[in-house]
Length: 401
Ligand SMILES: *Cc1c(COP(=O)(O)O)cnc(C)c1O
Image 1 (cartoon, protein in one colour):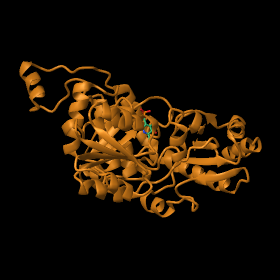
Image 2 (tube, rainbow, N blue to C red):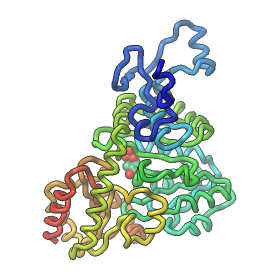
Image 3 (cartoon, rainbow, N blue to C red):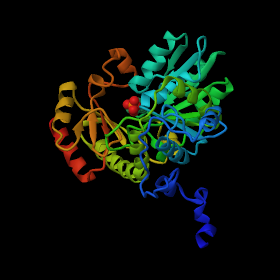
Image 4 (cartoon, rainbow, N blue to C red):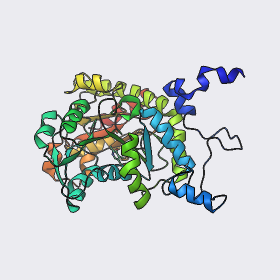
């Protein structure tokens, strides 16, 4: 019985990367190596009393895949281990996770505060959607925590931030904003997509809930949409579980399986992409056709010290301004031979986007200017290609400026 006495047989004694390969696994009686995909909408019970016990909660087994499923649970458990969270619930998309998390914290008459620089859908939920349901919202410049303090009201129940922000990779001080939110009895939700769980741990910095679009780095190969919400058992098994159970923004077990398997290589991929992004940021910073480079761990960053403190790596994304107008910026992107023009991010394939005319075209020109999104801004999601190829590709593109 030597294995039983091996300390590493206890999953909690294993390091994070080992947990990402084995953690949260639930092997079926068939003893499969790779986790099984339980494509089943429902589950059967041995007899009526067992069914009753499942519904009362006396028997914790599965009932219906709108709110629980073994493959989905494996993804949630593994992700909770990575985040250091007590509990997690997966959803059909990142936006389902954000909407569920925000909605779980407010009701009519409450107030929400968020940073202005948010992913498009997130900004819509806070700015346009909440007010329709009687929840007023205030958007602030997230670069200074004092702006959050000034926006708080007695009925503020939730603060929502994203850091680094999309697309200009500015930072919000998570610990400082958490303190302000908690002093007013509000919940802090952090959208951690741009940093990933490998580089930034919002719960350790005081956040109450963390949300992800798993569509991005967690899949990392552009195959499926998914989202996940993580936090304390109390918050997750409360209204968040109830909203998912009763309104159904549920994830397919197949997509949960893609994300579960993605976690096995997440650290490897994110670290390599970050290394590549750091090299590219350094290259762009020296390039004569680049006016400004935005990268959290580049010394030119206005929040460099915060970035070094708050993030273990400098992000897999780089934003930069071309020294030219929109036409010149289009020529730079259109000259690329390896890097794809698309709006996804966190992918193995490097992707470039022109936020002003795509992801942020819905905003007014003033709103874009406020966010630093000019006609010469490009956002690059750095992938897993050879960084020398990516640098040569960018050099060729910039020659077209
Ligand atoms: C992509 C993204 C979302 C939305 O996720 P989907 O999976 O596309 O629904 C939310 N927040 C951020 C920061 C994102 O990048």
